[in-house]
Image 1 (cartoon, rainbow, N blue to C red):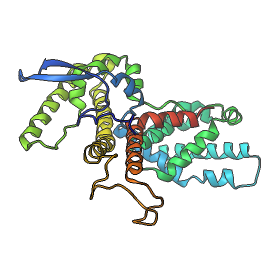
Image 2 (image 1 turned 60 degrees about the vertical axis):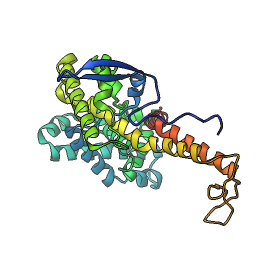
Image 3 (image 1 turned 30 degrees about the vertical axis):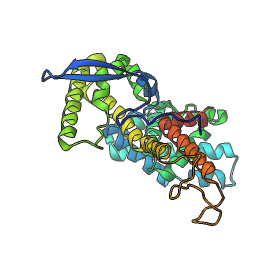
Image 4 (image 1 turned 180 degrees about the horizontal axis):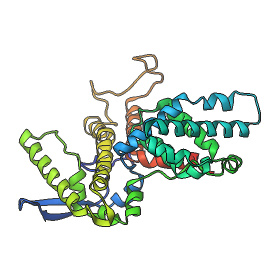
Length: 335
């Protein structure tokens, strides 16, 4: 616990990394201090790209197909045939369900899909659909509780060499991140733009008047519009593309603000209001087995260290939450 004494980050920091400040002038001639996040380039590799409206429509098809599929029941419980044959049959079935739902949802797109006799001819479509489900789950951990488990099970099975030979294609592709998207557009320099931080930062309300908050929101809006005007048309970037990138980075900043930063606040409260070496009356952290639901006994100093270590652990997990999820999926779906 004594080693873990990193100070909490500021309200709008998306990472405790070093940042470079640059003074620029906004549209109204006002000087603004824009901050370039020196670690955004690396962090963007693990920031999922926000789904578009079109992708959300396809996401509903994926979740519907997973809901009606009896994949795990048929593969793990059924006795007929070998396991590989059962997996192959169920994967074909779920691909057929997806194809049918697409025809019902978008007849023109569905016609193009079913024109091909073999599922392997539509490899990109099925990879795209299943990647949408995986990406949406990272952005919304509380959603798709049962469907996501089924999705990962079937994708894991599909990565077996025997199954891939039978299917003649893979259902897995890398998750679409901000970094990957900008790499495809050859627009990675956008991540070094100092105004990008100003356009995607979280406006903290604590300790500020309404007029201060409104002023900061206006500066953020102007920075947002300047970034959009600057990059629309560059490298084939449409207005929607630029908004997707900024929205995805902003989503990550808000996630950190409302999940990681509370841990920083609690660490600061613990450090400033409690002394591990001195047990003051009314400020004792000691717990006893059977008292107040406690399942073990800790003295004041032991419990202080226990709580401090736990908060630092969760703070670090939440700080790298997206990275850990990306790496966990990569490991699970590794052939």
